[in-house]
Length: 488
Image (tube, rainbow, N blue to C red; front, side):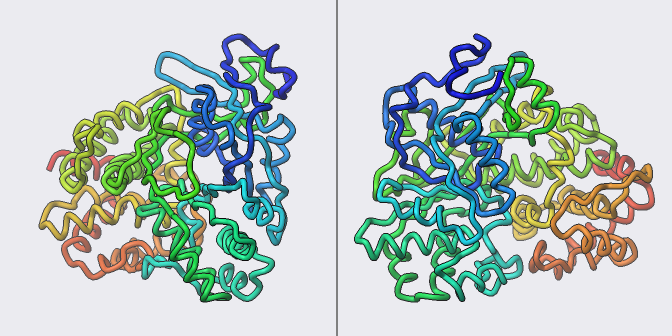
């Protein structure tokens, strides 16, 4: 059955429906980046909140800035903005229809429709999920890069921006001219200090064309930091088939684990939905939650990803069931990551690790190892390298993290140990493949990626560990290297 408003009453009774009148919803949030994570996370929290009868003036209007976003817009508008979200527990499956989005602005090259919607006084929050690599951070300096060609183009033609940050600047400029208070800009991406990173991108983009506007944004616009969490696999034929088992004809269903978490700084000058009523944590300690999640969960994904790939695992739960991969995951987490993570009110680091162990092992989620291996050049410096740096500063062991880097380097050779090819899996794939070949004879070449390792390239302790493990991975294989690490 085609998913549209008119068919909701005829759907399979196992499918939970929006428990509120969608006709009562009014726009309050523009969200840029309507991928799976947003629809399984922020949209679900708002769906739950609307079901309490509260805050119906905070509905989502979707948006995108890439040409490919037009396909998602067409798919979602064809089903009245409704999304199928299927929660996959180890022993149960819970499908629901999420109705928190009420519109999706036209995707245009110079973002005119998006700027107009953000200029609307009803827009009080602009939220983002544009991926870890979408913030124009110079990996060498770890700061915003105003010289990036995309940003430079927006600085030269601010009236016709092509990036989300240029569009935000244009909308804020229009609001200032009209005397309309600025909206809050809320990043929901997995980036340390995502509020600060977003502020740097917006202010830095504005500075290129209008320094006075940039100063006004810096002084008046709120950019709260946040931590978001929910494992959400990519959608493929299996996910569409699962939706069809419930009688749903939906080309873009979302599957996810039951667990979800959202931690936010309470900095919303123009108001916000009462998300604390549906489990969102508001705190000024976001960075402690963020460090725990990014180091243990996202870093843990990297630990099982490249080890699992080289051992032939296709799914995350399959990797967790492999004694070498699971043993590697636990030992590195316990000995090299947890000592540098602070507790939060809900979890000690050890308790959080046990939670993550169970989540990764959930056989129903079907999260692919290939997805976890994706975009290592952007993820490693955020999720793995900080733990290496902390360990070296403390004089602690980093052998497991060095092995993880060696496994990533070996994966980037472009073939697995059985000779099967690895399809390109990083925006910088060709360079990584060539560099992996160079590093086979000269391991230091891999660590000279300052965009990934920064000053670690010159650390003799880490360099020696990495070289030793890379040689063992190449000469003896990943299985033997993992065996040796676990035996030490």
